[in-house]
Image 1: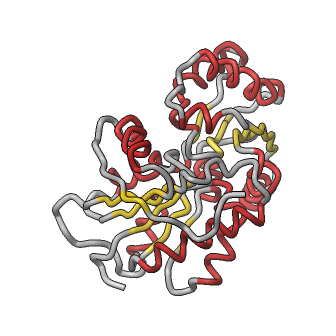
Image 2 (image 1 turned 45 degrees about the vertical axis):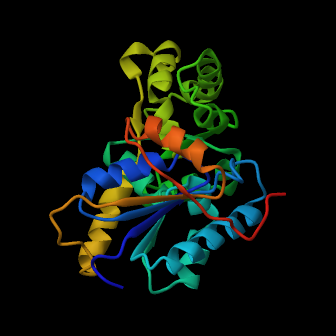
Length: 277
């Protein structure tokens, strides 16, 4: 493992690009390899054991690419596969997004935490478990959002459909008077404008919630871990990024240009062994 080795990131689809975007800001000289499992997106309604298998398979691919760290830029993978991956690949730091997200929310003073997440992440209980471990007194209200990932993947984050879904999913968090809401899926930051607009309808004007993007804290945590292990790149030139997808590279290229703010990417196709069921 060398200083110049890349950092590997993966997600079920394009949503993890929200994490890759933050890594480019926090660790600008690091090379990145991003894997989007678009052939099997979304993960949120799949059996948790199946998602664990997918995540470990992608970790194995990234290890084969000689990465110096792996970031599960995917909440459900972080919820069900992080510990398994850390045991399977003990010599490589593997970081999830859930603990960093909760840590950032608590640091901002959250007392009543709301979580917008996929059905699988909600079912795993990972967010309440992490929150109560960090701050036992905190209350946690979760809202499963099955429509959000397909909406984001389709590039419809500001559509009428997105607004209606946001209204439905934010309602229980408004009823619980959540003061902080964490994006429990890396696709959801791309819905931020819609979520902010709908929250102004549903919450009291003097009690609007803060929204927390775990991607920022995840990048900072990764930087700290690499620094502790003397693995930070010492280069001054901007790092390079390579993108892989298990699906159609042209689709990820279109999504990437949108999600990365106009940056053009040229994804490569890589077929995974386990097939969608």
